[in-house]
Length: 148
Image (tube, rainbow, N blue to C red; front, side, top):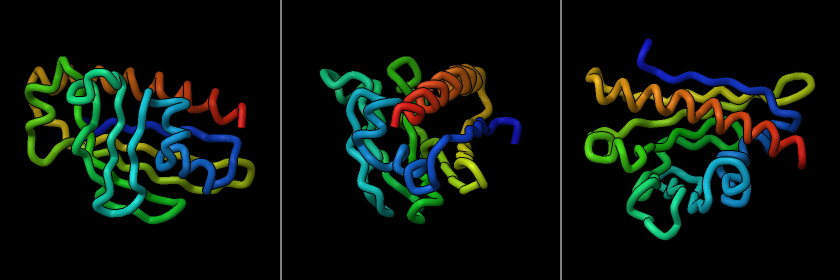
């Protein structure tokens, strides 16, 4: 359990809108990535691109949706950026991200778990990098949802 990244955030919107932040390309492109190609269904693509000129690097190209329950749960594969690509993107299974959304009285709770980390120094470095990046991404997400 200590190798799992866990983040939670409350968003000032309903459960459906909160879930769309992880499943609708337009929303993903406003807080997480430069370009998104997500098919919100089991087996669908979950491809995000941070550098559209170099789609093979700094992307989740080839990643798939593993679990999908509308407005509440999505699990998808995840790849690492260029500096971790040589080990993260060739590992099987890939790391995966679980996003669970729950409606509360005034807002929506998002719970994110990023799991599948191996037990080596290079994997620890990658996990620590992602911990910081998920924090930064959630700040952007919160700022974006306030504008909706």
